[in-house]
Length: 360
Ligand SMILES: Cc1ncc(COP(=O)(O)O)c(C=O)c1O
Image 1 (cartoon, rainbow, N blue to C red):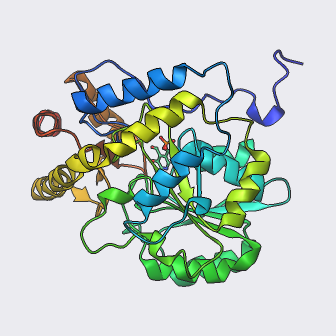
Image 2: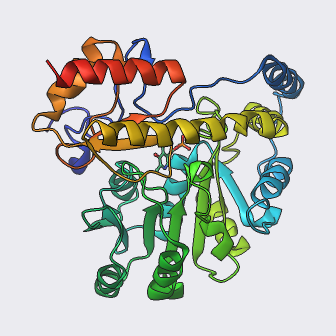
């Protein structure tokens, strides 16, 4: 018997996490490169100071004011009421809670690879069986194959990032509806829109389908477009009965008073925080065009990152970039690399470093 007496299936597993390296150009975890303004920082600080006055008390466990503010924000895409909103410490926690409530022993969670690398971990941690179908060579979903797999596996939860991580591929609304129908009310279809705000013009959000499908859940986060990765605030929109069910598994007072205050203050600055999304989208499209012009294969991207390749030895390319102070992510199918969209200066540094590495 080894010590500590960890669950057998967890023994020897390395904790998840991209390298956190102190290098000049960090383009590896799809953060927003632009920080908040002084006015936003001051508002967050004042809100947190105010919350601190009552830190001897537990916070509002239903985070009612935050739900109102998040519902108002989401209603720009489709009507969402506060009782349709749930939030937690990052959308990672939202999805773990979904699996704790709707997955579990004897149940299956389905996704389609390549997909977000945390999903199998939520499955493992909630003791839900993990099944991954595959995407096509352009990383889209073949709906016939997807439906057949749903019929075979009868999943309790389907997890679909849109835009997909690591490929950047958005899911057409017709595919969302087809999967909701195939899964039926015996399961949930979770469309993970962590990068939803970066989608290209004309690409709809799955929020628009909420009214049609009771089993549809759309998750979002303040980590990416809102430039709030350090805030740890993720949320979802779904039928109120789904939000109610999650309340059974959440830890008591899981959203601290400080988090609620800071998130509310950040939401008051939504226009400013989201103000850089248009610039990041343009930068992304320019990066895709540049990579293609340089002769790389590049996946279509509706996100703030781009998957490109293919390399016989992708690790050598990743290392070559790191040696030049540029950190990107070695992830996705064999031979591909993923780079987050940064500031114009960061993109120039990335392009120069990549040119040097591949022409060595
Ligand atoms: C597809 C996808 N979903 C969810 C998350 C989780 O984000 P957070 O927990 O910061 O909200 C990420 C983070 O990178 C992601 O890429």
